[in-house]
Length: 187
Image 1 (cartoon, one colour):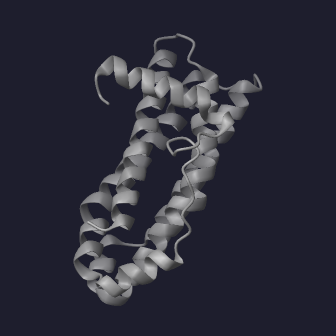
Image 2 (tube, rainbow, N blue to C red; image 1 turned 135 degrees about the vertical axis):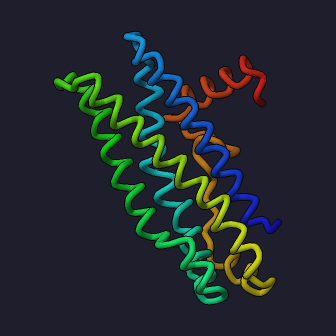
């Protein structure tokens, strides 16, 4: 496995960790409890920044290379850029719902729950499709020269939540995720 694929898979695993944390908060909300809105806001903020600005552009570069090397495999996957645009739209919708709740707008519980669950489900489906179809096809089709070229073209930005240096706005979120994982014996 190349360093690029390892990094992308690590980023996917971290996204799953966030989706798990969001589901944990939504479960509290569904039981008429009070979720930690700072955590939910941090998750929305993260999805608005890191995946759309740094993760998806790397995948888009890989996909363009896959289209050159194995057009049939790329076609079997579908339109990655359109999926990323759809993810971005759903992220903005989810973030707007979070802002509305935090601004104490009249947001029915069912609507917030539906927006959030749709966001989580779409994210999980997208990750699964990439892991099962796109990544294996890319690993099979690309050459060593392709990987070297891609590595030179990709910007390497440290993840502000899961990287070596945690951004100030993500400290509480990171602490809570790590605590939940320790409780569950996951990491």
